[in-house]
Image 1 (tube, rainbow, N blue to C red):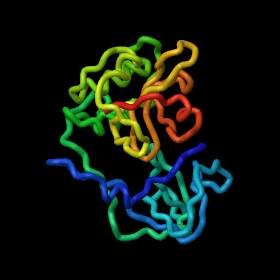
Image 2: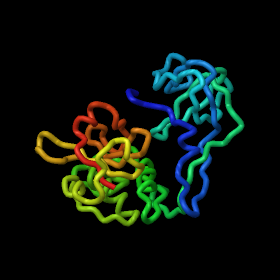
Image 3: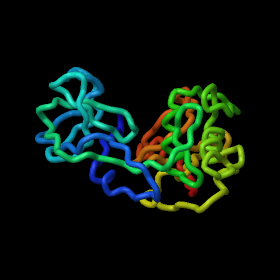
Image 4: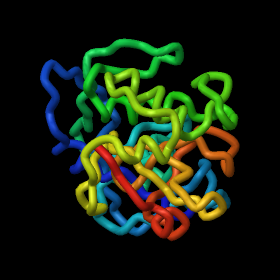
Length: 234
């Protein structure tokens, strides 16, 4: 999967602390003892997601087989590395989770928390793309997806992507993006902003994509997305 990257464990450990937050354990802090691929399955013949450098930090958990370890990836999914290539350190990696209110799929949403909206979006991966759709479970389009999630945390947005792009604080540098910022992309066919998603952090965003058939994640750093990114709002 082009552009896929592992979670940087130290960045997770240094994340901002939210008032009254609960701790969610992501796994153990691990360190690669040598160069090793991260595979999509517990097989050296499986697709390679990413090649880890020696001494790179990872977030790891035990797998169902003793000779493999699971590695947490930036998009919330897992890859696998041979267990003898990673040293598991005696430190838990945690993230702050806001006090919970639940959507129908169990997504965590808290009023005023854009980051919570971004994380909640991951709970709806696989929901079909439907033009004009407004149902997070049965079918939804890109702007409906962003409107629903942001509405759940107290931000009432217009219905279309081009209208939404006019609302909020502009973010003009990629390095200033934060989890929960909204991304807006140009659509040449209509000669206007025609697509949107929510930034997840670490280069990824979640959106309802016609090309992917529904809600999924993508890597913002790929040329496909960077060349049509025209606005970001907070």
